[in-house]
Length: 74
View 1 (cartoon, rainbow, N blue to C red):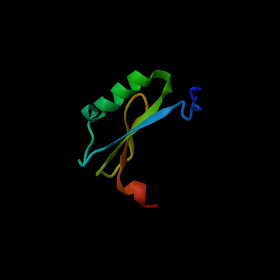
View 2: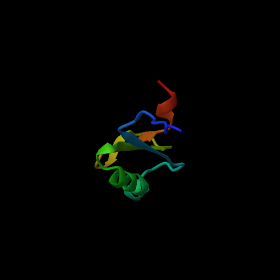
View 3: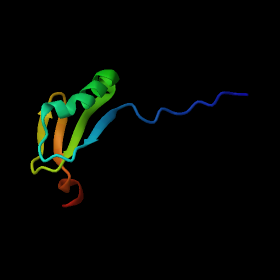
View 4: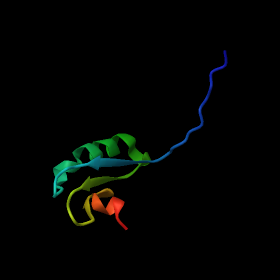
């Protein structure tokens, strides 16, 4: 039986973490940073969705905090 080869669909990845807190601190990015170090060049960055009010960079490389309401409102 011939082994089926699947096409490579993704060559890059982004992480998404959802928090129920109103503020994000650096330790909230620990898992995303670990994922980034595992994926290496395939890692584009990550987003932490939280209950706060401001969009902002949390930490390098490319880790951002985004308020949950911004995902569902114009």
